[in-house]
Amino acid sequence: MSSSESVKSLTELVQQPCPPIETSKDGKSQESSEPPASESQSTTPLPLSGHSALSIQELVAMSPELDTYGITKRVKEVLTDNNLGQRLFGETILGLTQGSVSDLLARPKPWHKLSLKGREPFVRMQLWLNDPNNVEKLMDMKRMEKKAYMKRRHSSVSDSQSCESSSAGIDYSQGASPQPQHQLKKPRVVLAPEEKEALKRAYQQKPYPSPKTIEELATQLNLKTSTVINWFHNYRSRIRRELFIEEIQAGSQSQAGSSDSPSARSSRAAHSSEGDSCDGVDAEGPPDGKPSGPEADEFSNAAAKSQGGPAEPAFEAGEEALRGARPSERAEPESLEDTDDEGRLRAPRQSSPPAPQRPGDALETLPNSATEGDASTSAASTSVLTGESSYKSKESSEKISSVPSTSSTPASGSQKANSLQSLFGFSEAASSRNTRDSSLRKKKAANLNNIIHRLEKAASREEAVEWEF
DNA sequence: TTAAAGTCAATAGA
DNA sequence: TCTATTGACTTTAA
Image (cartoon, rainbow, N blue to C red; front, top):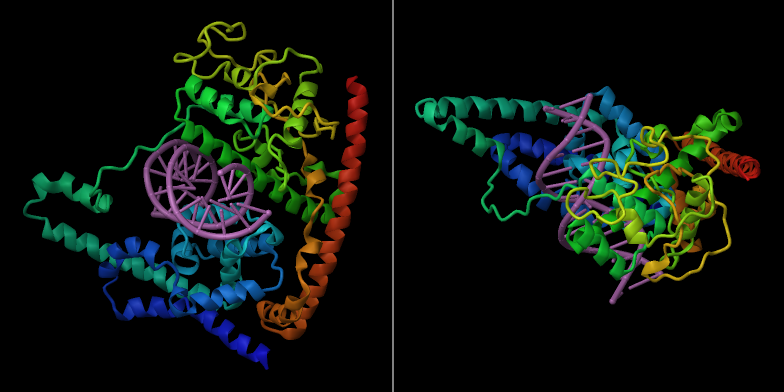
């Protein structure tokens, strides 16, 4: 029975994480393994890596659709409940760094949007969750780490006792920064808020700026072009992720209280707007999409609307975006009309605090006719932004169309998938079935609700539109 | 070749 | 000390 085999391998997998833990225990000297640990971590990330690396990939390939959102939710709960840190969990179980774990837990992508590689951590998490002992093990490990740390501290203290006075600083630096060996490291670029604003504005006008635009932005903001390019890449992908979350949350929440509470809204950053993450957002890029695709248009529309008036002077994307950025440095001296004394452009017309985020906001993008697709730099004809950026439109939903249900998969895999499903599913076959059924049902319900929700939204949007005009 | 996906790792903030 | 954010980089996929 292939299934039993897989059960085995799965079981092994589930247990894998511990051996290493135990091993290190045996090997004792966490200290010795620690310093390296941090280093080796990257090289020998996962406990599973060794021989089972392959099998995890196989598992991933064969695994049925997992509820990434649910998994991360559970993981978060478990970690919190047991006071386990992301770092330990990530490095030990997932083979990822803390930041990645945080990201993953906070913004899981839907299964069907994940590549094989991207699915791996989720499979690991699922496996980890499957065996409650794993939590214990991790806790053990945590204790040991602590112990080791204390030991180390003690020993280092006693060691350096003599030379303490003078070397204190040195010790510290050594201990704290693991081999700064090569100071070659580039300092991390930190974009100033104004720069980010400018970039966001540019993004809103053109999510896929032409090289020329990038160049311009870079010059004007006094950044490297690579930084600008990176920024766009990152921003696009992060926005996309925010959308996924909304999608998920909308789905799951609409199913519960659904309808009336628009609040289903992702509490999350997305809107929070904390600003940042996604201001202009929503530009889900059409996967296939050609640059400057719909999003751009949508943005413009939304933006135009938000301005209250369609027609606003058209600026060159870069330029418009730039107003306000780099006050001192490069800011176009010419048109500072909008800027305040400091040269800052501040969201002009509103003079009010930044982005008073209006949730219900009807800014939804009207799927409009395409604007001139002009692509080229100048494109940006749309007015826009001048700073405001809270079009949290949800058109996301529109693009999302895809949606899970499909995800499931190609034929051949399905059989295996089924058997695996139960494996991933948890202890009891029966329960797993139920779970699965119900989760399927849930999903469908969620989908429906989602659709309803969108329709409602669309409806309200129209109203808004009418009102606006 | 390019964009997306996935990560790392520095750093900010609680 | 831990988590969240984010610029940079690598890998993958189209």
